[in-house]
Length: 606
Image (cartoon, rainbow, N blue to C red; front, side):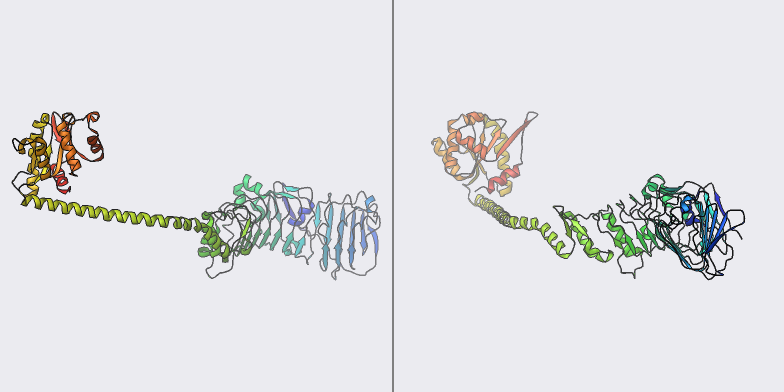
């Protein structure tokens, strides 16, 4: 019975053919004896041999080798039999009987078979072994048939496909047959070859594949439909390839590459130069237990991490992550505390050989976060952070304490320096407040004392008003009368409290003596300073006496005064003490302050 393979628009190299389809074409055989010998069958160039590799099968186009004894096919076995001179041989079949024996193919066993296009190995009962590169270099081979080799569960084809193998388009359908050994395969290894492109759909009904290893090739594109029938696959390794080319050029295909692998438990796509992972890449792989993304160029966990609830190992070592990133810390914490089974306590993440900065105080929070969450990480003791001088430092509680101490040291120094200054400033401020309070209290006491004195002593005046005769009209109308009125109100008396020379000098008495007498009877001297006042000798003598007697003097000015004509004693007082100012507005003079303020100031001055 023959079984068929349908290949549409595809050219399949022999080595890749093994990985994807097997043709069953097996006749029932028996091991009648263990004799060795060869003979031609008919006129078709078929040479049939029992338990021996024929010597120089000249003229044969097909060689059938039936084995009933152990056969060890060594390196160059066919060269020693002079097969290199055979020009037309295209088909070799090696088979055994129902009792079976074991055949082992060593590296370069096929040397000398220069034109072979098909090799059938049918071992229905027994076993077969071969070196990793046993089929490497068979450049003319188009078909490798392992049908009816029922014992095969693991097939290793490492180091066999060289020179770059690509399938650019097409689809492959494998029909199910009872004798087709392909359905019993569970593990297929195609490591260390030069597979480049697998751009076709693979249709395998009732696939039993559990492990597929495509690592250490140069794969830069795989059509997502290649995995569409491998629903039973539990482990897939594509480490050490070039999937970043696919990611950058065909992002959507990469994002759906593993969507059909619903039972996938272990996935290794390490060392593929991957710069990022699209968000929904692993959305359908909710049963993933181990995911290896190490050795890429990732800087963020861009995929939906929370969909991988059963994940127990995520290896992202040797990437470009910066663990100081707050967003990355948030993603890790959210997965460990919210997404996976809360009863799981074992670590998940391997972040070794990624960047962790600890050179300044702003990195302290990251170090503290790592220490508090050390249970999240595999190989946590191997994590290293980059210090101030670029050296790699071990992360532990002792390092955190030293970093924290270094960060607090400037604060402690500042506090040690500032505390004495703060103490002095506080003491000064306290003394100043006490001084101000005492002074205010003294002013209040003075005010009460002056009011009581003015109420009981009829010869006492609150103010002596001094001015030039040229300013009499202004002073009498605008100053003397309102000032006296406001003082009377505050002191609560009807008698006059403001005295002046024109009003209170006794007649026939020395002017100077009278001025001295009135100033002595007054608590405060108020001087109306104008240009006329500054040029008057008598006015100047009043000022001199008041200052010499320590009488409080309040200067009152109208308009601008020429400071150049002020006597030095007046100029000094003018610049040192506050004064009463009159302003002219629309031909009228208005007091810049209030009469209440003027009166209270007069009563509070000692």
